[in-house]
Image (cartoon, rainbow, N blue to C red; front, top):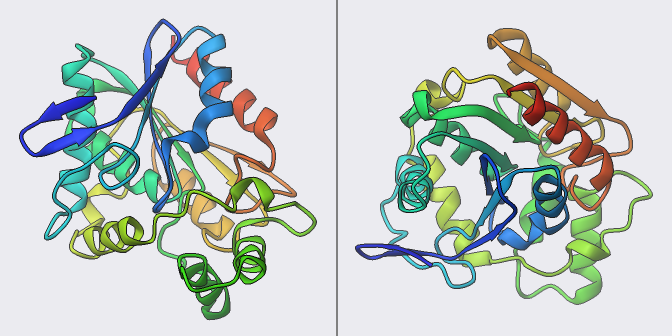
Length: 252
């Protein structure tokens, strides 16, 4: 556990080497990075998976917080681990936190990795409605599975690995934190080299967001995969790990 004041963050560490911090998606746990984290650690890196406030053993105020508060949580982890410079990786909502982290202390970020980087282009109303349904605790298991499959996965990919781990209250509070934040000055995510991994069937973070981001931000690269939606990690874990590890190695 990492503790400071009334914030207590549960982390999971593996491997040795340069530190790679990983922040999960909206209302999702650090365990989403289990496979990716293991692959990166085996490639020679110190991986730190972070459970955000409200998930697992992590606690802390969630009322009236902004993305900057959640970004400072990540720096609290780095500081207490004695890490001066880090790599930062975030998935989905976690990429907004990761951009905030990198913007707050750009000189300490070696590289920024964004998985499913949403932006200015929003999903369709129908897709957004399916996405919001996933967090409805009143859905039957079959209805929940259908909502997860429709909004998070490319056609034909099984959603079964992603049916658990949805933290509705935390997702609501994280959404409000983003709404309170002026994201424009944080959008580019600092100045470190950046990698965007994009699923070409992502309906929540439409691919044009990724294309625009790497076109307008210096020192940014894009790796895009077909047959991959917004969930990404359980859809093509080997390809994602390969892209991330190649990027990490290129920064040495």
